[in-house]
Amino acid sequence: MASGGGVDLEEIPSVDLMTELLRRMKCSSKPDKRLILIGPPGSGKGTQSPLIKDEYCLCHLATGDMLRAAVAAKTPLGIKAKETMEKGELVSDDLVVGIIDEAIKKPSCQKGFILDGFPRTVAQAEKLDEMLGKQGTKIDKVLNFAIDDAILEERITGRWIHPPSGRTYHTKFTPPKAPGLDDVTGEPLIQRKDDTAEVLKSRLEAFHRQTAPVIDYYSKKGNVAQLHAEKPPKEVTAEVQKALA
Ligand code: AP5
Image (cartoon, rainbow, N blue to C red; front, side):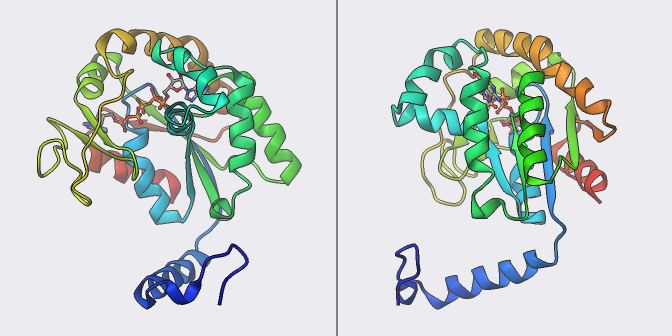
């Protein structure tokens, strides 16, 4: 028996089907949530996102990851974005707004979404509100990963990533069990091209000039929760849970 999407359900192992069924049953009782994670590079957005995603059955939309995938695949979008990203500057609002507009309509975003790295300018925030307004929805909470710039260089230069899963490690703070390998799959970890001390300076400059005003934009709407992002990961998770309770 093939489903509408052409997937042959008989070929999927029963244990996987049951796991997915149980996940969906658990998710059906969760409230819908539309969240924004905002903070400078290395503040922990990507580290906390998978935990929030699993807890609330949301989709995780990270514009940086989407753009890097487009760069790797050499799509027209990726070709346009590559040079800008490697310099640590922001790509054009139109490019990312288009990506998000498509992505939030996916079935995996039915219970809501985590926007990680978007909106990054006030123009993007206004476009987002317009998109959600058309659907009769709005942002429920903005989690502000507040942290001093001085902490970020060590976090960024020590970061290692498993691109297929989005799992993030740090050579000092959260090292993988075997150096350079993902704990779950054993596949190699990579470092991002823009994760150097030099490019970080441009990324921080872009954050303070273009993205910090987005925090003010949402503060005026009264839905920003402040996190102490300099704390260890588990303590940040506890603050996230409190903010979303
Ligand atoms: P993007 O991929 O979004 O990068 P970013 O915002 O700079 O954020 P990062 O992914 O670097 O940081 P993070 O907060 O997720 O940190 P993490 O949790 O991994 O964007 C890249 C580029 O894409 C941009 O420069 C731009 O060109 C373009 N772009 C993307 N979106 C765009 C948009 N909307 N508009 C225009 N352009 C856009 O943590 C970092 C490290 O610290 C890890 O190693 C982690 O293990 C460790 N760590 C995390 N939390 C803790 C903790 N509490 N204590 C100790 N260590 C910790």
